[in-house]
Length: 266
Picture 1 (cartoon, one colour):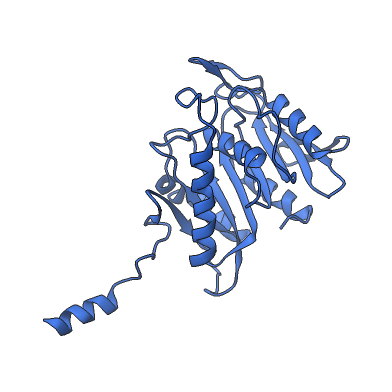
Picture 2 (picture 1 turned 90 degrees about the vertical axis):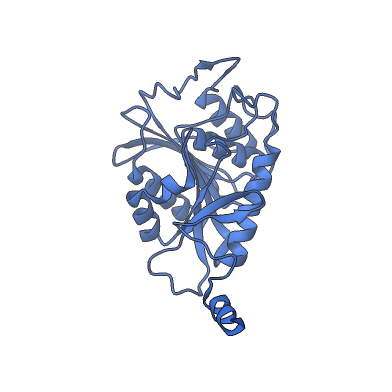
């Protein structure tokens, strides 16, 4: 019996083993991770931490073959964060109006620490991105908790009500992507219960001033019409619009990754 027990113990996976189909525990929460398909098992790789939309899940993100394929082809690991109850604890939110976001910032710190220790993630090449409520999470990370990230790609999401009075430095690169006809998170915001979605323009102007970004240069990229700014440190602040509503396309995320790479942030 003892020999059988030892054999089973040796065959069991390590306690921290996890991946796209199983949870990676961090405290009382978790995330999921998918390494690039051509990863050799030893090299440090960049990572994209993705924050899901309202009522989403890390498991659902990992079932999205399109995003997994694109992120892998870009050479990144995909890390899917998991909000509590499918949402994020953000300042001025409908159910979290008095929050300071500290619980979420600590959670993302835990993800970064765990992934860099156990999964070969390069701590200097981590991007935060997300859609809708996840985009709101990304803006909060960019302004209030930028230290662990090389850049940010918020898609169709911004701050609830208003940005913080000031952001924490140093400024990092941001590529914001949004649908011109978005009615779920409109560019001008909309009221929900006792609060309101903030105006995207306010977030961009706030960060433009904070990061000392220069004059805008217009450019086109596929279905995106963009205005790009740069600061003396080489960081970028891009605002890209597409002709559509509250929707996500993997090519938009790829554009954000490419822009951060072009700017030398990765």
